[in-house]
Length: 228
Image (cartoon, rainbow, N blue to C red; front, side, top):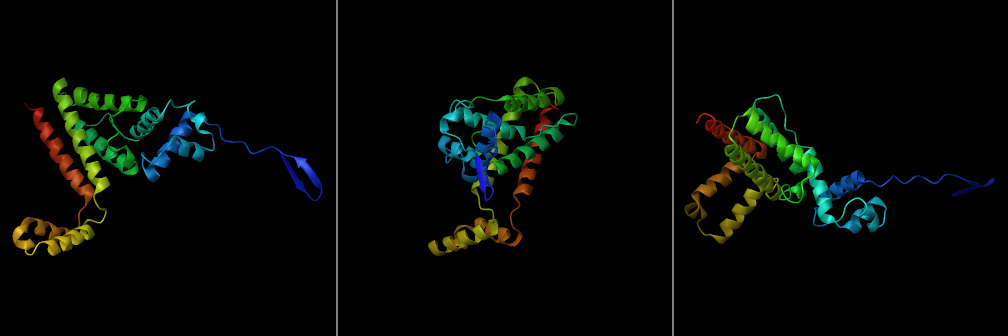
C-alpha cells in the first residue's frame, strides 16, 4: 500500500492480519459467549469479530456443534484436578475450580457433558475417575455413583449461581413486599419463609459459604462409603 506526504508517495508494507487458526476461533467464541451467551453467538457474528468471511471458519470447525465442543474443552482446561494429595482434598479443589470456571463462563452450564469430548474434557474425566478409583479405592460402581453425585451438586449449584439474584437481601426484601401485598396475613401463612427473609435481610447470603458447606457434607458422607 502507498502512504503520501508532502514529499511524495512511497510504498509501505500493509499491516499483517493475525493468522486465523482453530485456537483463535475458539478463544474468540468463548469471549463472545461470555459477553452475550451461547445462543446469541452465530457463525456470522464470530466471523465479523475475527475480521473474516463466515466460510473461513469452516476450515477450523465443521459447524456450531463442533464449535461448542471446542469451547467446552477450553472450560475443562481451566478446571484443576490436583494429584498427590488426599482424595477428598482433590475432589474439593476440583469442585471449587469447576464452580469458578462456570461462574466465568455461565453459558457452559448445562453444556459441559454434551457433545463430543475433546482432549481436555477426556483428561479431566479420566483424572477424576483415577482419583476415585485409585486414590480413594472405590469399586467401579461406587466411583460412578460418587462422580454423578458430585457433578449433580456442582452443576446444580452453578445453575443457582447463574439464576438467583446477586443481591439476596435486596431480592428478599422485594419478594417480601410483593407477598405482603398479595396476602393479607403472610406471617401466619408462611412463618418459616418470613424467618428466612428476616435472617437474610440481616445477615445476607454467602453463595461460596453455602457451596462449601454442602460440598463438605457430601464429601464427609462419601467417606463413610469407604468404611463399609
